[in-house]
Image 1 (tube, chains in turn cyan, blue):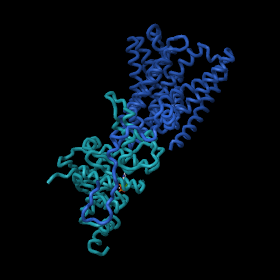
Image 2 (cartoon, chains in turn cyan, red):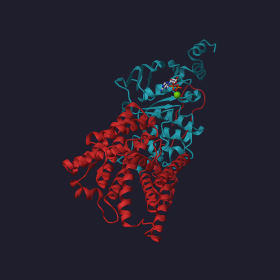
Image 3 (cartoon, protein in one colour):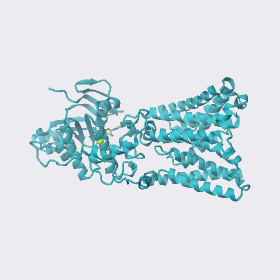
Length: 256
Length: 364
Ligand SMILES: Nc1ncnc2c1ncn2[C@@H]1O[C@H](COP(=O)(O)OP(=O)(O)O)[C@@H](O)[C@H]1O
Ligand SMILES: [Mg+2]
């Protein structure tokens, strides 16, 4: 039995007196696509930030491939190959697309000077490779000149370009056009074949059900459901997301 | 590539994914092949960032001055070597270097209003050390003081999260006091040590220009490569533009801000040396250096630097400084009364700030 890629145990998060996450545990298997579902304010984005190492959990343990991670932070997750598309803008509007894609990971010579031509060329290719982005003229465009969907696509392109083991997408399709959304969902299934795991946070249960191997439903900071695709249905997920633990119980009794 | 997944309802996406594209295309789509085509094409990405527009204004003004001076060499003595070498090539470099200092810090999203006090203190330390221990130690001590002062300010700003213009305004009184503390209230003056190497390095008259202009050239080129081509400069833009986004990609915004303060301090310390060698003496607690604080920020703003961080250019800032000094020089040559000069500079700054705002809107 091989170890899970990432296992989190007993994760809680408090912001002042508010408990945003309450004793959450789950695993993400190697090559697995996991759907992270739940109503607004359920704690999904907080969980995403904790898994990405940009926010500290109040308590909780993390295991990567069975090994305990002593201190979760962005340096560790970067080293492990975790790449995240954050829900709240992760781009710098005043900078070009190229500079955003390579921000913090610039292609440089050994003195730290950037190879602009090389980065522009790769950026142009990255933009084409995953989601079809209409209307972007050049990677030298400022991100502030892009539409919400185009900016979202740039964030996706960046994450996809740098991902190595785990790709986390927090509501990536919220601003995307239909075609781009389909391409992205298709891409997640393809990643599975390459052994890359992904976590998809979304409001759209149909999207989640199309591509995810397993679904985790959050409600008021608690995990109320964790089911493989073959053991659940869109209807059951809907009950859990909309009505919480009560709705889930009612659904299982057949009285939803 | 997406497989049929057994046991599920509904259609499965069958989107062909062009992953092979990575090795094929080397040039962004739509970029013309000819040199002029490409230049014209790239221009659209430069426009809206301030530097181009302000350069046009500078060129027009400069042309006006040259024509006026050719028509009336005595009435408007702009092209007189005394003016070019004695005024322009001494004042423009100092303001441009200070503008770069303030501008780089503004790009990082911070201000340092103790710039003037820093100049006074660094210049005093430079003068006293040079007199006592020679030029090279003096230079090191002057620049070192500038960096130390700015870093103390930076640490206060970064770790207490007090808005930087409040914290550094408060600290400016402290640094002014520190100057009086180490020197007393009488002016610190360069005497014998100014002769020879020091004068040659920092204030020598080469006929139609002075040493300072060479320093501006060197610092300008270094600053351009650092801010626009080095990854650390890139991080300064990122942190100033959207600190949360920079942090999410593991850029340490506190370190980047402290680095920006240190660069600011180094440039201010260097400018302090230029000022000290030009004037030969510095008055502790004096207000002569105070003006530089706002003029430096003005140069940055006129040059297209955003007041809220993340936007600005080295060329723009240098051009902005040149523009301010040229306006000042022109009014002086036209024998306008002193208050006109302040007034015109004030108006220029406000117009530039409004212009900047419009540009920021247009870039969106
Ligand atoms: N930085 C923060 N400070 C205080 N409360 C926060 C912070 N971030 C999130 N929260 C709170 O945590 C709860 C969960 O938020 P979030 O994780 O964004 O939920 P979701 O992504 O599921 O909609 C919300 O009630 C939100 O107000
Ligand atoms: Mg969210």
